[in-house]
Length: 232
Ligand code: FPP
Image (cartoon, rainbow, N blue to C red):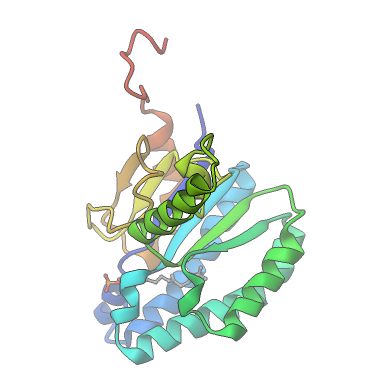
């Protein structure tokens, strides 16, 4: 395969529909979706991808039915605890990014433990966006930027205040389940990102589907605003 994406990000969509098609509760789809997370991580490690990030829960998702939100938070805590040995075994650095003010203290403690424990790992960086939205990120960055600017710091860049500071912008954004929109996800960071949309529902998106998305990306020409001739 030609040039591999350094950072792949995924909007994991379609869990609810997947469950409904089987006459089950929505949460069943989320649990099956967690298996897709596992499969995609495995392939990312096998292929030597540097960053894999996942949109697991948006700021807007707090408005979902109480039981579904509680179920998702429980799944998150369970996955973090269960996958910690896998992170170590595979040299994975684990990160969770987003608005922590809405998360429970217990979940924050689990997240921090896992982040600390894996902070020295040098293989795949796995990022879970939890209670995140692009507008939230820009707003929190702008507030902190303004304070520093007021304090006399003028040689500063807004992107260094985003919660993704230090992480390369995504090269490839995948969205499953046939929806073709960005839904308040990394609004700044996706300025030059290649988009890949697929009808596949997230619980059905496994290694072959991810491989196909990466192959499609590899065959595209990225110009970053330049002409085709300039980048040759
Ligand atoms: C979107 O499907 C999916 C979510 C809002 C949750 C994604 C969460 C997981 C896959 C859980 C596991 C995550 C990790 C990191 C362990 P939807 O509910 O919007 O589906 P629908 O559009 O069919 O209703």
